Length: 361
Ligand code: SF4
Image (cartoon, rainbow, N blue to C red):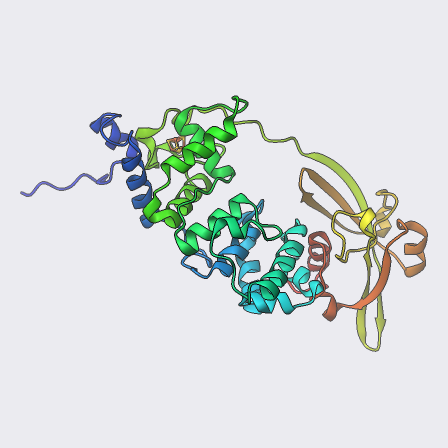
């Protein structure tokens, strides 16, 4: 009778490397690169910007992904690229429309800079992004990381990307701890040496993917890691504690009225000195978060950067808004079917969607 294969035909990396010994090849950079690229080819996530070679598409995705979860970016990226498929379309759009399509991603400065840079590319570079990382860095909002990502993925320039994920992987591989002297310089030098110059784009994406999936900040999945044999820490690396979130209660007013058969909502655009999100529309903010139970329409939690907001939404008439809300912004009654395409803050969109006043995205 033929011998049946064991049900576990595919040993995990820890088992394989234990059988082979720790230093039988993966300790040199060529073997690390090969293992990483093979893992990436077999395991990369199917994301809408994967496979895009147009520098503009890579640029938009990299800017959206900064400090934002992949799951939150996917739909926004798809809608943004459908409306602005080329850089000149973005350059020609009014800023309000760009911000509206960015709504929900947060960090709106990124959208403003992207728009400004697109206008420069349209005016000074005939609508074609510069091809080198050095030239790309001259554009507003494009730093070393984004320039390296665009130049390596779109043009194969052998320049290493170092984002937070890559830095964590390299520190764990080498056993470097947070707070070590000149850590950033060491990480950048190591990234440059490890880079596969012939496959710079795939290599950079593979490092970022490894950090985002297997080598995550907490509970790295070392058993499945292609770099296990070359890693000095293997799950024992001290990870810096997560920054503590603060909590804050805020109140906002929901004022509704009907005009010419249409329901309208009172929205406010606060002055630049009053908000970190100038140019965006939100519900009027109340001076006090104390809301009586009979006035309360909704409670929501909303995180912005390091703050968890406990938001109480109060039903209010226009006069009450005048009396109770923080002064200083410009207010406007907006039909709900128009509000959907305004640049709303993520919080305003969340409240209006939860109350079924806006359709869910
Ligand atoms: S072995 Fe573990 S700690 Fe080391 S790089 Fe892989 S996932 Fe990260």
